[in-house]
Image (tube, helix red, strand yellow):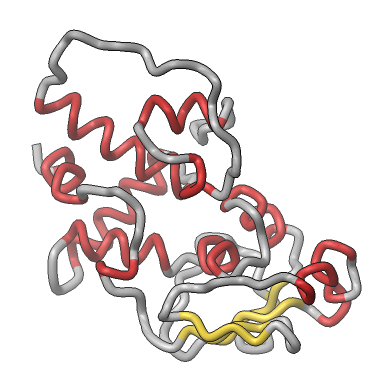
Length: 195
């Protein structure tokens, strides 16, 4: 398996990501390793690509295929890639607050707890569009995992309209680049794949 399954904090420190962006509310007690060597241009591009791959939990093949799709669409390939990553079902479930991390969201989707527009959806990579409604299945709503969400205050991005009473959220519009709060410089990813 080419998906990253190692220690989250260690990888987050390697890629320079705050663990909170990944949904992990912990701090690493280790000091970052001091590297005196300057990274090459290739090294910077590779690190940026790996950082985005790790953040969204994709394999190398999935990520490359998604980049190729993004480059065929109108507009900038890097921006399209980030919008497509944000529009994935597992990421939307994470952004709605139904899961603490993207890994957990992926698992919940795989286990069939969600519906999209009233139909069963158990494919994490499913790309959602504006107007799609993601809801928790009626049978799953009674489980402790989801019933405890009723008392929580969940902040969602501007492009998602959440209704916790019905356990559903509507995508009002596709996310724009300014809606993506992750510290990503997507032009390095475009440069990496353009080599």
